[in-house]
Length: 169
Image (tube, rainbow, N blue to C red; front, top):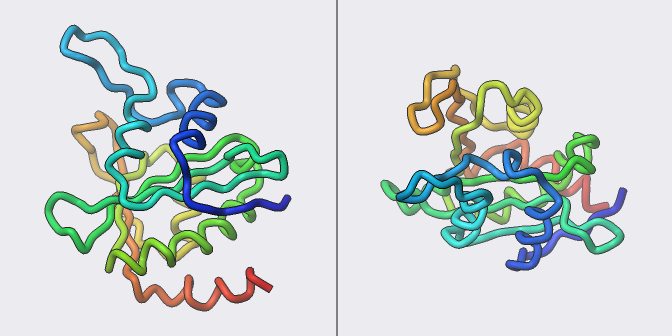
């Protein structure tokens, strides 16, 4: 399938969020009264990101979002995130090809990208390994209360530099 990748808008975030179930949009957050705040995690990720990219299908619907913002410890390191709909998840080659277009843009701003990935999300772990990310062994992550991998990639990752020109032809 053909996709158009461009900087994302708040409308893209809202449209993708509406097409998902609350649990797919990231960790659930709670307000001071203990009431669930669905999709707030996605909105907070969007607002705290310095770059957010969207892939749109032929109908103009967003089907994947990539975002990155600085970590609080080191502003040269970007904390990245990725959110997809079922359409793109069902086509892992398309998702990898789209990621190879977006990640170098992020790595032009940050010297390293890193994130925490749920160890049970085998598709995400496989995708990131295939893109050249280092995937550390799973360890308990207190904030999510589950085992997670820390993943990262340096700006000079050779796999992204070698693969991208092939996809643009």
